[in-house]
Figure (cartoon, helix red, strand yellow):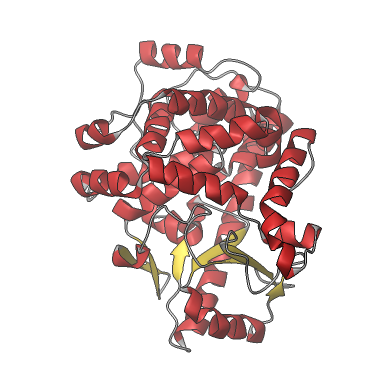
Length: 386
């Protein structure tokens, strides 16, 4: 199903093109054109364009008529990218069906996050959205049985993972020799204070004959906002997911606005709406306009996101460019309340599994782990992984 894209007028398109400037702007504008938006199109180098589209995960959203309008060499390469993501999307869909069936046989009902469920929910097409893994949420008390099911399916913990999880770690990565990687979540986000009780707002989707439970749009959107903000909105597919859900005719905008306010993502919403307006000419609905919280931090995040989008930066590259103090302070400033800001700071200082593996401290010295965490975060400024 094609997205009902909002087409820009010639003057609006020109204004947006002027705003999207700098390294990588040509690739971003070409990609937006191929996705169906009325942006100026100048054919960039084919390998660079394909690499850009692959990084941003949007090959499944390229419009056939736009792809066919480009030079033959470019068209052939783009069709390969579209085929690649479609094959991957089908593999992820099959993997999710197997996982849901195995869990259901043991009385477990996972909540599917992003991935195949979101592809169907947002685009009505499994092949529209690829990915590299399956994200599922289960209550922590169900994890022992769930891990047993996954072991029976041939999964094992990825190198560097550990169980039980430290308090600050919200996911466990499991790998299989032939099946998609799984990220098992015990809460939605790294920050524990955001988005509580997601099971209260869910919906069931038909994934090629299998009932899959996922977040309902009014709750999925605050989650996607917070997730994209956590990664500085650096991939185009995350913004497209939000944009596509906002275009759903059955979306209850008043309910969504209340969930955004309740979840503490009003400043993050402002960042996202600014980006959606700039890139896709979104006409912001009045209920969302009323709850967005413009602030200096949200404007700074817009500039940071545009740089990351244009230059296809990774999380580590964004963190290195920002520096530790800027990254932490910006994240804290984007929280809507003082208690949330304090909790965000506490989250940054809470040790993860990697911190504990990097330096094993005796139980009596575990209070030093926040300093270990700070030291390892500081390493990002020099380009090291944390």
